[in-house]
Image (cartoon, rainbow, N blue to C red; front, side, top):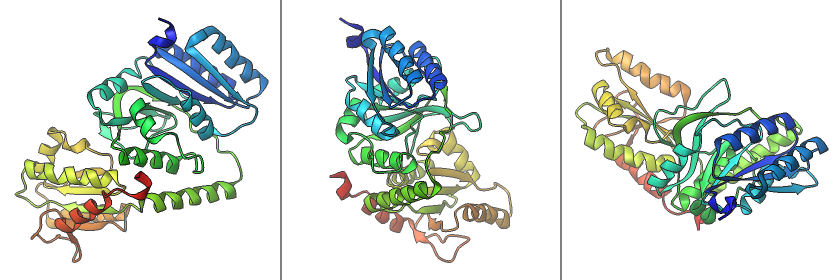
Length: 349
């Protein structure tokens, strides 16, 4: 049995110059990613970087595959070409400026092993200024080119990234939605931090803006526009009923919507203790002040509106009025909207 046969993950690293960052990235990956094969795609780098990759490939022997293009074909196209040559059960995509840490991969693989619906997995990422919240596993709406893992089953179902999109936010959100349409969910999983650098933006501002707008329009045409909702949960709702309602909101979040749920303080505490506070990154639970006057509770609602002025009020229990808005949806109306959105779209067929 060769080292290649023992590899359970293929790590794809698209490279375009940045030899110092690339060297550091590869050293860390090799040290901290056992049982991995490294697929390095050199997208027309200069001679210094080219030699660096050749040295790594020679030293890794059959644990490395070095691919090269004579021109810079871009990150997404490089990633797709590397992913096509992958053979392992898991596929990891890592930028050449990312620094992994010891045991960074194990929590992702362990989670995937116990959650067959998980198709895309992210570690806890930090750029030195902000760090993704990683207290417990949580569903997410987008992957990250800094570091992400895709299961073999998910990749075979959805293929690679859309090379016609922006190579950033909309491309990643499209990939996650395509995975969801095929029955695979995306998660961020607690574990060792993985650090990354924000990428240097190349090209003219006008062209970048045009690409971004085109990608946003393509995404909206495929998946529709997401909406923001704020739900008021009245006193008397128990944890079991709340859990059922949140389960439906998660379905809506998977299809692009965002929800802020205003809860009585005691119910909010119980929800957090039972793990309902971390179902999806686009389902946020907020407590209302326990003993405050009505005006203080209204301010919580107004703060939500200030952050999202087009947020749609919803009463979480039919028959109860929304206390701070004369116009609102009933939960039945919201449920019908979510179920319509969850119907298969042409993009998923």
